[in-house]
Length: 422
Image (tube, rainbow, N blue to C red):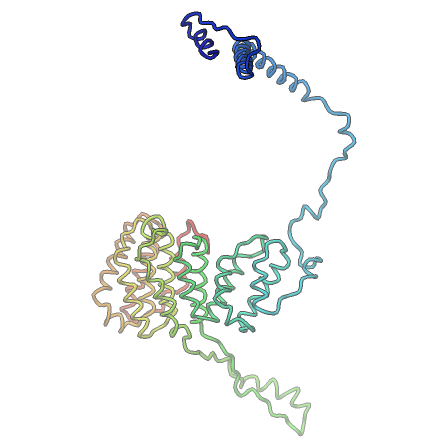
């Protein structure tokens, strides 16, 4: 009844009043208090808005006036001066943190040290001790080689270690050289979703370095007929006269060339990279990730160059030449430059007889493609690589292959823009 009475007043329907006993129920008493408070809020709403605005303006003015005032207690606090040792953030390897950390002796201890998130001395001790352990196949390396490789690929520079990126590439390279079967595992990680783009470049760089180290000949200096027979009659004569005279009979150091160690394992490095045409949702090698595609092609050409002259090299070259056909018109100049580098690598790796036997029809098309890019490609780097490719293709069918230095056109195959790993 009370609610009906209040509603008729609000909506001006008419005067509707009810008589309630003086000792009303608690419910009606609470309803009367609510209605009376609400009326009070409606009446004072307009006033409260104006009062709040005035208070805010007074607060702003007061803050502006007090901005220049200084508390008398501020003089009690002395000015803080940063110590010199805190200004120099470079870590000294002779400090107590380094001296108190024990150098790990086992591969497992190094792997645990690489997971350190707080103690930089422990991390760097493990990081710096790894390379000689990997090279000599320390105890536990064979069982932990794959885990170590994955850890090095995902490793982050939390402590701003000096030359971190170069050392990490060297460690991955050491793993690939010591255990060649890890090459396919590293490539699988490179194509996986969990691998970052910068780590993919690191893997390709380590693959190229490992292939180059494997294929490089070992030089052994051998001096023949250098033994001097002692003259028993006159030792002083031997010391003063015989030694200088016999120097003319000493032969110069002889370089003994060993077989190419990379040839037997080139397939395990090369063929996993040929999966560039597989569809992946996280990688678009033809489109937005074409920069990575160019790096992969350069790596494949480098692997063919390092594999030497062998039947497996011919098969790899044929596979690469087939993969290059749809990539020659890619919009990214880095991909076109990598295609030219691969053609030059094939011509530099195989002999004239092999090229004429297996690629007599294709090499004319390669020459026309390289010539067209050398004349009309919009990229300066690509035109320079095309000129080198034209010369390499021309020399591949001639008898003289000594005019071009391999290292020169390897450098020219690297575009100067957007290079994360040199």
